[in-house]
Length: 183
Image (tube, rainbow, N blue to C red; front, side):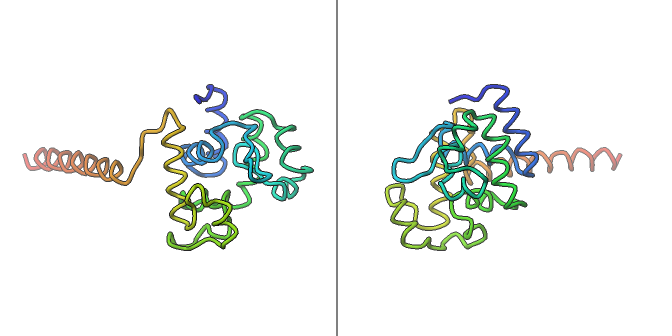
């Protein structure tokens, strides 16, 4: 699914309010719902862009998750109100993990990657292979890669390549500047 300009502007605005790169929020939402504001998890009460469960929707003042997606049925309205209101509780987001886990399992926001989720969480997510913090992070990256038509595939390998390119450009610029000052 490709976002409209209004949806992209809203995503950028909400991301800025949360102090995060829009790509983080975009990847998270693609992984959780494919940007379908009416998405429903068949195995739980989870609905909407970031898969609000009934208890979370109730904490936000709704009767349940169905009430939330009924009152905020579009990408734009969900981003501006329930998604923003929920996520701002967990600010600041220093890493992708602190954002992603705020949605999936907030108690694990700052746990080490190898930290194992409780048995009930593992059981509910066995089909997706989610049992540790790192496996959820990998799940988000994999799902976002599959579902997001704009994703550039920002893997560790690609990040390292970019770093090398930037380092090379910086070294060349340094040599040019050094040479011009020695004249």
